[in-house]
Image (cartoon, rainbow, N blue to C red):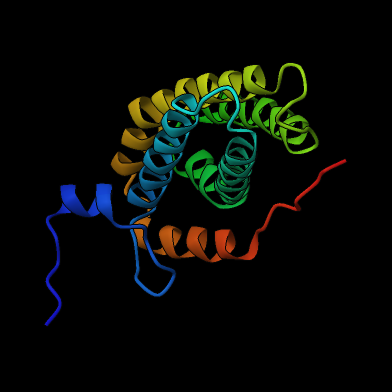
Length: 171
């Protein structure tokens, strides 16, 4: 018999699966935590861990592209429609995504030995940390209060994320 972990443990230890319905905010928060952990892992790598850095940076970029694309196509429009006065908040989040995507394209097209590679990964992490703080502190509470169908949105988000795969090189 399978036991279900408590919600706090489930969020930190389990990655949502497309076959299990997941609340949209829980899914997005899980993504945030997963990427944060990957950035922390990257920061701990030595100066000569080039192959590991490149592999991890690609995983970070891939996860961020899946997350951002699904959010822009599914979650943000739902928030814009359901939350009164959400236009500025959603517009700002969309611009932050565009900045992140620009850095992602640069990182994926580079070699880990190139000048500014580590700096670009670090700046991407800082941008994402800021973005996550705004989403979790402002957007998610407003979305929850708006009584969106977060389970249906979660299923749509996961299905869309499952369709997306970042090409190895974007140049």
